[in-house]
Length: 81
Image (cartoon, helix red, strand yellow):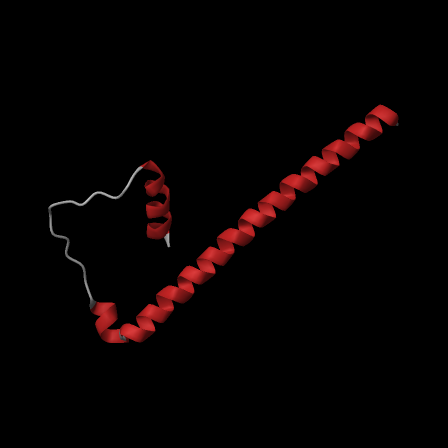
């Protein structure tokens, strides 16, 4: 999924460029495993990655809010004591 993350981050800097050179890749996985199974595996991997990213962002947000709330309570205790 690192290639997906790379493209996602690069898009913030501008649209993708088309290069005039050919790129050679291997279709071995598609030939041995098959189209349907390879596609399903890729889609499930993408879904799991997306859900994990969303859960991590949500957890980070909760941690920030919790930490902020603790700091506010600590300040109140110090002031009103």
